[in-house]
Image 1 (cartoon, rainbow, N blue to C red):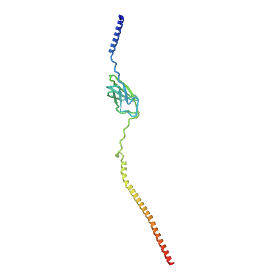
Image 2 (cartoon, rainbow, N blue to C red; image 1 turned 120 degrees about the vertical axis):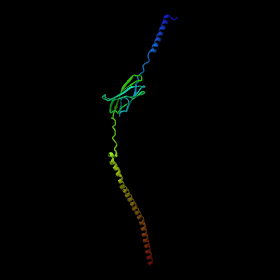
Image 3 (cartoon, helix red, strand yellow; image 1 turned 135 degrees about the horizontal axis):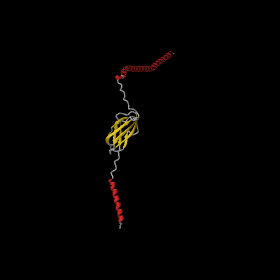
Image 4 (spheres, rainbow, N blue to C red; image 1 turned 45 degrees about the vertical axis):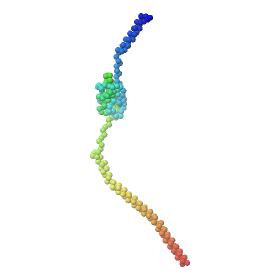
Length: 216
């Protein structure tokens, strides 16, 4: 049989376990963690050739659209711009009102987490070049391009000279061909004349020989 003291110890232990379990159930649930910044575009510490058009912040969860704020300060600490970013789910987009000149900038941001607590931070960007200046107006004919136009209009006047040169060259080539043809004709008629003369001389020689033989 279990002694009375052992039974009392067992009952006390069971009561302690029950009280501990009830206390654990009565404890409030742990508070929800604040949202955290996952990334930015451009990234913190980036060196850019030209100023970005906007800065996009991406958080771990949807943030509340409650008084979000972004401040841009230059190297001397002077405030360059104060922007109210656009909140869309877990992202907040701060569009710059105008391009940033060359320099290093601190961008401070503050939003309200999904659990209702404000969160904030700072990132740094460096811009290497000033915004591009506007290009000058394109020169037109009335602004000084008239000389080029006049030069273009005068160019057709030179065409007859070029055409005359081509025609003269063609005539010279035709004359040369005619002369060459004449030379070729002369070269072909000379052997014929020599042959005729040779035949005449031979005929005279034969006739003389015949006459001499008859006299003999």
